[in-house]
Amino acid sequence: MKFVDEATITVEAGKGGNGCMSFRREKFIPKGGPDGGDGGDGGSVWVEADESLNTLIDYRFTRHYKAQNGEGGRGGNCTGAKGEELVLKVPVGTTIVDIDTDEVLADLTEIGQREKIAQGGFHGLGNTRYKSSVNRAPRQTTKGSPGELRNLRLELKVLADVGLLGLPNAGKSTFIRSVSAATPKVADYPFTTLVPNLGVVRTDAHRSFVIADIPGIIEGAAEGAGLGIRFLKHLARNRVLLHIVDMAPWDDTTPAEAAVTAVRELTRFSQTLAQQPRWLVLNKLDLLPEDEQDAACQAVLDALEWQGPVYRISALNKSGLKPLIHELQNFLDARVEAIAEDPSLLEQEQQTRMVIDHEARENLARLRAEQRAKRDDDDWDDDFNDDDYDVEVEYVR
Image 1 (cartoon, rainbow, N blue to C red):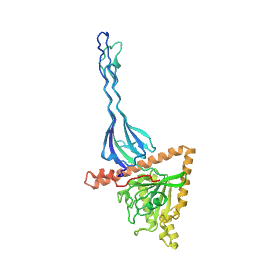
Image 2 (image 1 turned 90 degrees about the vertical axis):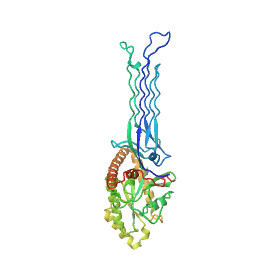
Image 3 (image 1 turned 45 degrees about the vertical axis):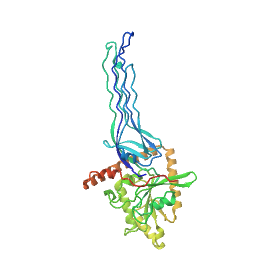
Image 4 (image 1 turned 60 degrees about the horizontal axis):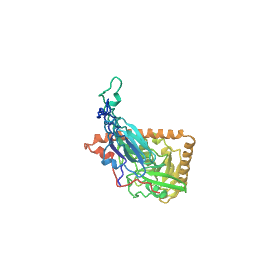
């Protein structure tokens, strides 16, 4: 299955059925009167989070969705049938954005969560509704109102507790392979990771968390270099970021320069995201002589003016991973306990994510506009929105 994390669709709710104008005329029954029934309401359009889905590829090929119209009213005071509602299944973590107003209509973060995104039309009234003592043979009816028509953008952000940030070949894929059962591609060249990978890290029988590995960013990613910054949006829901730095780079870039580049591109993408909890992980220290390790690590700390947690590891040899994993678990458990004691913390967290999403959409829209201005191919923007790869994002336990 191919991975698609964005799609643009049009949804249209059903039109309400028209009211009926009818009069009762039956043999041997005197004093007939109006008996036109109301129409039926049009069907609404809903979205529902489905745990069995992990890509928006279905919405790449079918772009228009319409709910059923309501039936018209009938004589004998018969009301028309309501239109059948349309339910669109999307992966958990999908955000629904109205393209015309830039309004977030729904943010599906829980399995089975269902939200209405287009209201069906209201039914029309039959002439029975208008009868009165002074209007015994009314001929007035109303038509059903049209359903809502919306142009929507579906944005999928993978749900993970911990996100990995770093340049290509920093060792992010090796790290996730070492701490979970996930098996992303690992090779000795950059950009081996083309889509996000998820893995479940188990620290105890009943304790675990989800970690996400995204494609690496390079200098100029905010201007579209490399794979750009579109995959950084998958870090918006993480509660802590691990900034992994390659201490033995494959090119002439120093670890300090690589660390500063990653932070700079993250800040350009979203200043709010750059201010979220972030831990520094210095990787591949086994490739440096022991007498050079301290100086190399200190150079990175000085370049970043770092004051937060620092961990020295070798993802390949799994050295230094156990303390890091257990401290991550304790940090996440403490956060859950704090939210349980003070529910307002969860509201603050959700507000922060909304700000990050807004900043990310603005930056991605700017990037697309700049790229469109540079290219003459009118179809290129569609390709940019819906890039697909032969890799599936899945939770591996």
